[in-house]
Length: 344
Image (cartoon, rainbow, N blue to C red; front, side, top):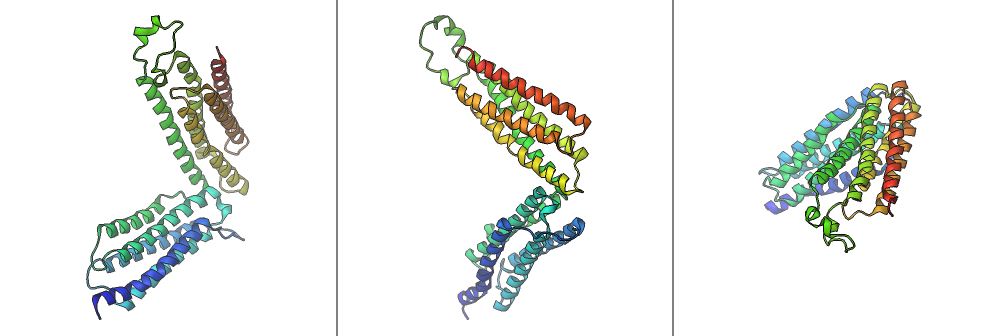
């Protein structure tokens, strides 16, 4: 039998499982979990899931090694390898489905995304092996194998319960909002009108200078102040909420789990709101756009603070900063609106 025929025969089982792995991946990404009728043992779930992930990593390594150098596996060995990796993939997806929504939507989303990433990595590895010369180890195959390992290793860092999952969401939001605040501060410290000192005396009654689209006017800078105040209130709200969840977050009742999910969902809207406001502050400043976005962010923050206030994470000590931030939001919104409407 020629080498080409041998390669053709051994690739058949790989082609067969590729479509199956992709189907499993799509079902995990889009499907629903099984609802748990009785008590669910989260600790047992994690033990079994981690074993399943380890098995996928090992099978992917075996597959990659088998196709890394001559001689190629026999057709029978190829079928055995394909069956083993398919079995590990099906086991992983089955264990993922054990995790019910009642353990928390935020947790389930993060476990789902991590599972999909592993399945995607395995599918890509099989595709690379099929598309590469079957008797050599390509850089692409090494990279794909490493991607599977990396995706599997991520499971060790996953939050173990819904409280941990919500803290992951809040931490990500804090990072994005902090970046937006720093970028606008950096732009303010660097930006100036290069002709302001020279031409101010000559400007009365004349048309504005041609470069005004590239710098902030004095009025612009005044308006940016309360907008920055609102952005900083957003960051403070997220930081304070994160501390409150760490201190008071409860995962023992359905109501507490649902409240944590509500907090995660509403706070995911904060960073886009801050980004939208930050973007419209750059010159040339569109005052109506600033007013729209400052009102939207203030409205969102009021809603977030109201949800925090009515949740189990808000005790007496948290109520103090909730009330303070509510005042800060109203103050900065009113100040921004007053400055925008001044002289208009």
